[in-house]
Length: 109
Image 1 (cartoon, rainbow, N blue to C red):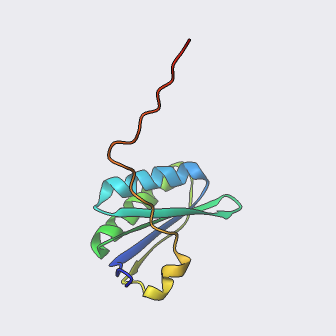
Image 2 (image 1 turned 45 degrees about the horizontal axis):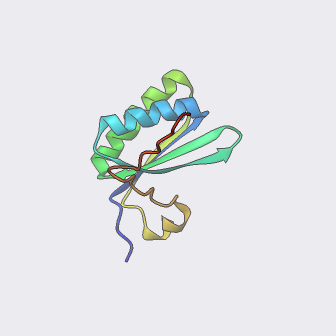
């Protein structure tokens, strides 16, 4: 069974720096979860977030404003209650990092 997404937010910028600035603002602005990002080519990159409609809207607005200060925002959009048919075209959910990742020890001789 596919878990329903309350809202899907997308922020597309020209260049990675603007996307990173926007994504940082998105994640700090509201209780949303980043589900992935994609390179579309020609310098276009898009981040995908999900959460409740109000949180995603507030987060995308904050991210768009922040990204526009350091680069070009191509598009910012929120889809409330996206149809489950969109699932195949969305990036797969990122797996959470382990709480205590293994530490690699380097010995010097």
